[in-house]
Image (cartoon, rainbow, N blue to C red; front, side, top):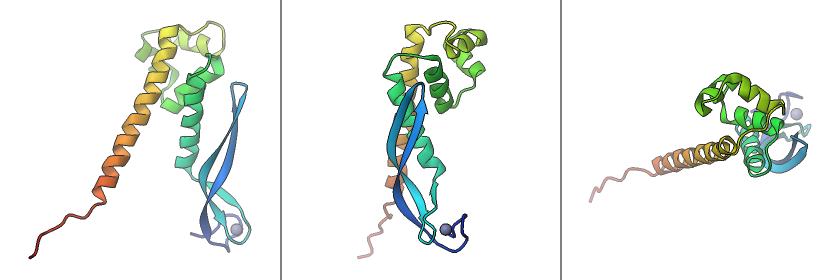
Length: 143
Ligand SMILES: [Zn+2]
């Protein structure tokens, strides 16, 4: 794979520090990236950026709720505000009030957020395990 910045170098896999500020907290973590051997330009892979965001969502879910945290976690989970409202059994305006700090989110809904994140993590771990299991060759006894 050629570098998108200089067009000359080939890309090598490296670990790169990623930082992001959400809801008043700045998070830092190491993620997988591709780095050009010639110009050192780095590209963080989309999957790695998503993993980083999921880790942040997990941290936020374990802290006190805030509008920005609610919106961030909702997006990480892949829900629109309307979908989340329907899932939680509230009106879309209620979600909007949570996310703009006009009304506090109720405890049950905040707890459900953490559970949804944990469920997403478990599902992905199970899928990864299944994919790894597929890597084993099927043996045929020939003698
Ligand atoms: Zn380059």
